[in-house]
Image (cartoon, rainbow, N blue to C red; front, side, top):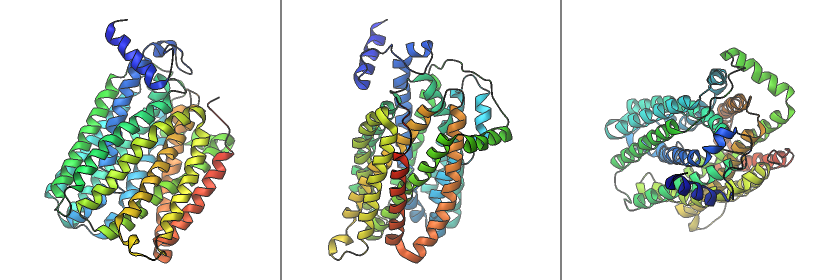
Length: 438
């Protein structure tokens, strides 16, 4: 082993707390030998992806962009459903195709390149777009970006399961979340300095950085040393869908996980409504956006490594505990609608609750990602991930429509109470899931 490889191995052991990098679970011996190097390739790829996700957020950045373009308000309401469902719905249809490939990182690279190009279009729109046509092109680019995200999502988890050992995956995702949070923190601090200045140029720069993030993601994915996997069981689109429906009917463990994950959507759905309450107090200026990005980055930086370590011990408990935290956040945010006092007219109370909910949502994401990868065997991992994501995408579309109606009649405070009940149900459902890390 040369000095560079030896240093990389020592750093890997330090970050993971692993005293012997040669001890692996659930991956081939050849992949075990490459694990320290692959760990850092995954880490950089995930850092690029998470940074790009933050800087093109449909919950924060894109609503500011649509407002700056003067796009119709109804277009803003389409951002989150397109971003989430567009990435999740198609996945079961490509699971069988991915299964036919012994080396799957190419699908991941393709998804990263697609996302980079779509973010570049958005950056151009930030500079030159106007009104309804500018907003429509942003939505079209978001559709393409979401489809690329779907490709990357399923391939990333499959390659992760082939190259990184069980009880190391949560730690990897935790460190990447922390690093991305630190960079996002710096960007939010810079935006706060802009105050009430016009923001289209700054938004274009943010989206160009997102473009770079996905380019880094694709480059690092291409450099991962992946061992050929089994190709038996590859299916057509409809074969994959039929197999997925069979799994939902007969695999009670998988069905229970998906029901818990459906209730956990409450954390994601609550974030834009809390941000919206804050936006109403600060307007569309970059100072308010900077504060929200700042607290989001700080929360992600602090939360992700902790959740990652805990997920490697018990991803079920991470799902449960983060759901309890999300319940409390929704209740506190809802109370702002009825509490008297001028302090509720500032963006800061909403920003603080938003930050805690970001921490909870980081736990939800890390917990359920680690759970599904550890639950699925290597021969079914891609299909499990794809089917779970497609199921969640359908629910996102349905829930988005229903919650819009609830918000119309009950207001944001009433809606947050409904989401608090959903999060509480998610905690109870997660508590009843079996352990998969032991």
